Image (cartoon, rainbow, N blue to C red; front, side):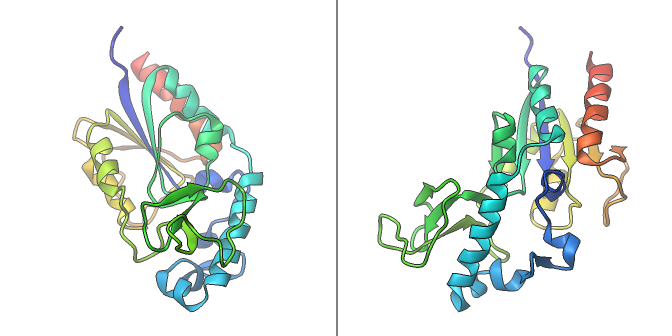
Length: 233
């Protein structure tokens, strides 16, 4: 049996938006009325941990109620013909619930919490809220297992290696303006077939060498599948 081609997907907030999850960039730097600097930075956590916990409790609740959409399902369909690896900037679990078997979360996961004393002491909390006084096994306060602005992205090196090995790279639902995640596309080889699914022309993006499917995530995924089947079928 021939080895499947490696298809790496870099996904962002746009794919989750079509499941009803809002993105802060669509609302002037605010998430449901919260200033991003107050709820997504270590400084914000130190100033007001209760506000940060309340914000992520709300996001966790919304995320768990959302359902995977056609874009999530379409990526799973590609697994029958390709070795599909999803690298997502999203903190929801819609890729997993949609059925994707390989998902790497660059910016953490809403369904997990970790100790403030040890970033590797992680626990699965599902849809449960985190409250002040909820402690990890080492006695540290639990915080969201989220990479905040200004923090290191621990899985960036793993992600870059996956992109280096890709035969096909698909960018979907991300404008590629958030670094360091946006730097990942530069690890793709010259022989890699590259697609971007975006209804607009993303800022700071050169389309040279890319196949641009100018559609939303849910409508663009069917065109991607059709094109890949034509090209590799």
